Image 1 (spheres, rainbow, N blue to C red):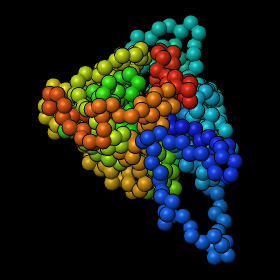
Image 2: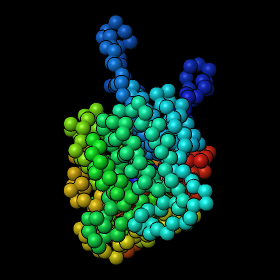
Image 3: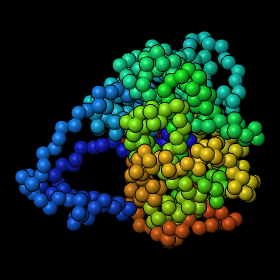
Image 4: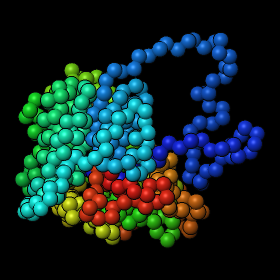
Length: 459
């Protein structure tokens, strides 16, 4: 879901020489894998520079991309890839706290605009609103038009992934107006569906429906736009006791994931940190001639049922993964807006529904789901699948959050059976993702591990 968990680890300098002979002492936890063997064919056997043709100089793109929520998973991924090939980025971020914010802020090709996209109005009267319809906007909040106008100064392109800090609809509309005024050549908006607009029997999900409203507004003012819909993030999984994405570690070393999705209904999956950036970058390179005209693109590289997802995850972590189809567990304080989102998810993916075919499409529109992963693969052919994520990244993210299970030997009952099979009530393990933001004014949804002291869990 759009609302983004922790982003990937910051790039750190190489460790000091530990052996004194030019070699480094290598320390790996038991789940680590080397990408290539020592005899990898990717390693050149020719040590002579005389046999290598001179590299042709490649001119850097003379374009600037305006980005909001720059420390979120989607935006940070784009910034990482785009600046590596020469684009400049004007990046709005709420503050410079956290690993990813530091990475973005220290990137020489990034101009940081630090501040909120909303403004607090003193003595503002409390506004009554239906959060399930209008989203969890805070009362008495305006729009920081000055910052938004500055964001687009000198930019030709824009990637916009709004969050529910402030009034997301008003901020989204203001961003679109400012982009139009700045004559932005290609406006890519990270959207999500309002399921109620597709079927009156389906409830609106508040953190998604606001994006649907903004998408309609962008279309109405004639911006040259593309809309991307991101699948469930592989990166959302954590063994910390957060709702919906918790891979709960059991005493026997196995994992349990509980969610309301039908175990046999296909869901779209995406590794946000690894795969959003190159896909968006390709959209910009191809331009509006190919992806314009309000084209909607489903960014998802795997269509997996919860059973299949858990089998992939189990192969990656080499431990059994059990799925329980059930209510969403809420074991930690969460913002009320996010609580409303979870309640909407339980209604939309009603676990009393026994027909997998009757489960509403994750993206609302069946045509978008049917397109997965064809268009995504056209944009980027090297995605990181769920199994690879579970094997190579999940243990590192867990370790960064202060957890140690990956350093211990498997207890009795764990192990690499990779089954993901049914356990109890004939149901199997399942996962789901959410997207970008949790309001720090409303609850302590932050990762507190040593490497991520103040990063927002969903950002």
